[in-house]
Image 1 (cartoon, helix red, strand yellow):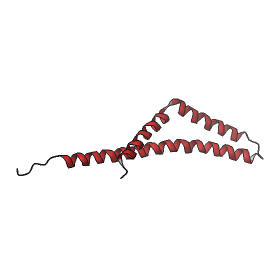
Image 2 (image 1 turned 120 degrees about the vertical axis):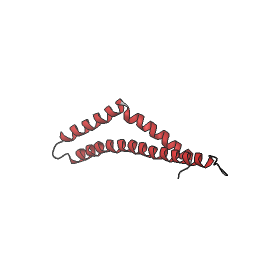
Image 3 (image 1 turned 90 degrees about the horizontal axis):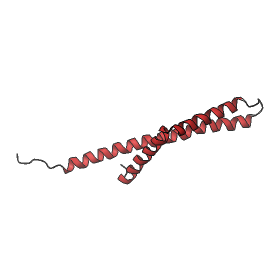
Length: 101
């Protein structure tokens, strides 16, 4: 298990990633970029292989960036679950037991 500071950092990063992915301007920017790259790709001439390749790469990089933020969110969810489990174990081990009853 990671240390609690690292887990808390991952939870905070997940929160920020979610804010970005839910931000309408962020969503709009990625949709606009993908649309522009796709349109430009289809408008290339048959012998513009280098341009088409660069546009194809740019188009797919937008997916990679979005997926990075989604991965950060998922990592934060796992970190949060680990923190919750750690807290439950700590609380359980600190709970006094009734002995001699």
